[in-house]
Image 1 (cartoon, rainbow, N blue to C red):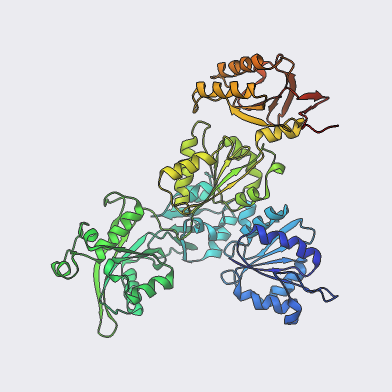
Image 2: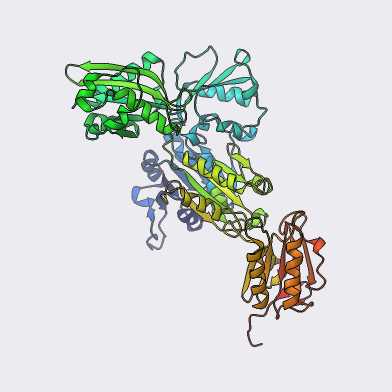
Amino acid sequence: MKFALFAPTPRGRQLAQVLLSLLPGEWVCWSKANPQGEPLPPPWQDYGELGSLAAAVAQNWPQVQACIFVLPVGSVVRLIAPLLQDKYRDPAVVVVDEAGRWALSLCGGHVGGAEALARQVAAALGAEPILTSASEGLGIPPLDGLGDPYGWQRGTGDWNGVAAALSRGEPVAVEQTCGTQLWRQAWPPDHPLFTTPPEQAVAQVRIGEYTTPCPPIPTVHWHPRVLWVGVGCERGTSRAWLERSLRRLLQAQGLAFEAIAGLATLELKREEVGLLELAQAYGWPIQFFSAEALAGIPIPHPSEAVRQAVGTPSVAEAAALLAAQRWSGEDKLAQEGATLLCPKQVFASETEGACTLAIARAAQEYSPRAGHLWLIGTGPGDPAQLTLAARLALAQADVVIGYQLYLDLVAPLLHPGQIREAFPLTQEVQRAQRAIALAQQGLQVAVISSGDAGIYGMAGLVLEYLARSGWDGSCPSLEVLPGISALQAAAARLGAPLMQDFCAISLSDRLTPWPAIEKRLQAAAAADFVVALYNPRSRQRLDPFLKALQIFLAARPPHTPVAVARNLYRPGEVLHLTTLGELDPEQVDMFTLVLIGNSQTFRYSRWLITPRGYCL
């Protein structure tokens, strides 16, 4: 994404500089030169060289996808007013005040992505996003952004009419013939969109591969990209003829051009210029198949002549079916998987060549988006303890996955349109599998863990699962974002108990055999580490904690300081200081961390201190 950043003053420039390192993209940065003639630091350019700030804005307006201004809103309105065309052509515009308190989505909110950008800018600056769209106020996803996470294409329709009906709470019906149903999870389950019969609707949303006639009410079309076009053609067939033929076939079948996922053909056609140009013009992938692979696909209209020429009785039909089959993830062709919608048709021109086309529908839509996984440590639970990187990731995520309590803790940072999937504590594997599957479909997925994702969190499980499944290391891409772990949170509340070597041990024997845990406890107790005990005790696991206490009492004196920390930085926080000999096991549960001091740890008032070793 290409951004233009306008910050005329030194203070505004300093604020805007934060965005350059936190928001990935290509930046063009404009400011006003110092009156003393000192040059602007890179990457800033002096808009005075163009004559005025207005000239710089006008020059960049058609070249970027987003403009960010650190200026008063009124000034920005006057700057962009002469340039505005419509929401489908204008870049997103976000305005930030010089104090860095607000990030306002001014125009291009849904289609241009200004609302999403305002959330990201606000997260990066620690500001408050200001979003004034009707859908934001209603707590529902924007209609004209509904299919974007899944790679759907917007079709024809009265977008303003349907959006207005939704904003007024009028009965709007939805009709869907293909594509994922996942989008429904981002809407309130009792929304009229899901309960309105078509005959009672005053507006309609159609999701599918067809271009059916619109009823006499406002209607819009979203097209999941499920159509794979099988192509056989003479050498030298022009791109123009291929496209005209394809459009004729789609129109005759009532299928949407926007629903095309990609092209498929014979391996021998890798260098066919017209075919390559057509795919490049619309950003379509091409799947190339060997004659042997195509020959194994059952098709309705085999040709012996084609077999004699290229080694397979079908190119167009077989290639369309095989492409749709592979994208559907099916082991074999099936009615509910890859389906041949349009048998082969031949289109010939005396001057531009000849082609054979067939169309198959995949069960799963193709998305050109690259999936991404964020493995996020949310810290102890207080949003104030969350890192900026984690806030940015949560602002951008299409899907947020985690244990319900963790989702509740970050709920104030989430927004309408995001899908939230909660899993019980014992379903970590299912959580990881689900996150990976969604990312492989092109979605941006945030997997949240309390504390740090890499300390008894989801990071290891997700990476292990990817590694065992043959992940190439880049698709989906992945980031692990650190968080404040429970032992760090406890240390901060207690003062300075971790100033010497320390270790963390989980007492949960659900995944680690107890003999291994016991061996580690004995070693840690004997080595005089400060020790943080995670997962110390549950209703089903009473003995491990009692055994751990016996191990430490055998190695350390009963007066050794101990802290029992529960729900730190959350409602119901409890922090209790005691000793190893007086520790009451009934105070400990799965939401508790137990911190055991070493031989030098001492208590002073409400603080625990482990001396570092300085001479005082």
